[in-house]
Figure (tube, rainbow, N blue to C red):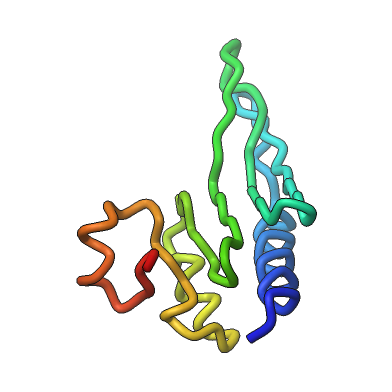
Length: 114
């Protein structure tokens, strides 16, 4: 598949996830943000907000495209964005689970960094 197609899939999936309702109640208020750096192929889904009087910030998803492959740097979702990419037709060998140690990646169903 072409890298441009991978960019489109990633942007679609992160945008869909960002459109889920944000948490707002008396104690917690979060905003969900997408960050698309298409020049360097870095993509993130973040939450930013307040938990009571404490500022809270975190990364839900972080993906990069390197050498024609999708590198999942962080996945804080239950479904797993790798599975969603496969459902869209991305070959498993083009998905690197970068959050696993390089020595462990060979034992997953997904690609390695080689």
